[in-house]
Amino acid sequence: MRNLLALTSALAMGLPTWAAMPSAEQNGLVKQYCAVCHTDEASNGGLSLEHYDAARPDPTLAAMMLTELNNGAMGAAGKGVPDKAAQLAWVESTKEQAAGASEWVVHRDSGTVSAAIVRAVPPRMLNSTNAPLYRMQLACTPSTGAGEMQLTWSPEPQINRSVTVSADSKEPIAYRIDGLESMGNGNTVKTGRASVILSAGRDRKLPLPRHTLVIQSLFDGETVKFPFGDLSETALTELSNCFSQ
Ligand code: HEC
Image (cartoon, rainbow, N blue to C red):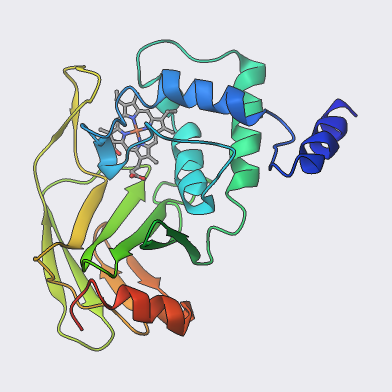
């Protein structure tokens, strides 16, 4: 009942709200337990959560966060973990925010268009119910031509790996996943990578796919397809200003 009331009052104010935990509370937890590493500067895993706002959720980001919340990330900062009730509420709210992550999420903000989508693959470990996720993100400022295409994955980092990426029927391009990440909070632990930039700035290595982008062998035997053909013609035209054709 309390949740329902919170919901209707927030709806009346025109803000999204989450059955289990108010946005402000989630923002506080993200700041305390996640943003210590996921800063703009360190950008661990290719991700900054410094400006995270649960009141303006991106379903594709929420989906990635959910896999991490279910895989021990809450304790990664070395500051303990929230109490059980808060953990559950945080996970529940993040789950709600992740709805729709398997469809393209397109945003336009101050002259920049961004698009993101996630794809799940079968669990790699026996008895796991957690499907690993891949997230494709593009951002483009058509007026300047500045753009970036990034692939991230969760929950397992990867190291010393060649991954092949094919845009439509064009020649596959190989990317190396090398080097270890240092923790943004100064912790001495190092891990492999959970992100790779596929195209950025002048290095427009990968053409903008019009139909399908296929990622192969980031993990053994894994193939992931991103449905660029599902993007609107408008979004594809805007994005084409920042990537090779
Ligand atoms: C001690 C530093 C540290 C803390 C604290 C931390 N992370 Fe991470 N995170 C990393 C590193 C390093 C990676 C990349 C390697 C990996 O996946 O282990 C990563 C990867 C990720 C990824 C996958 C890559 C991506 O861009 O999608 C997500 C999602 C993520 N973290 C979310 C979180 C969330 C949510 C929290 C808080 C509950 C959190 N992290 C806390 C260091 C941290």
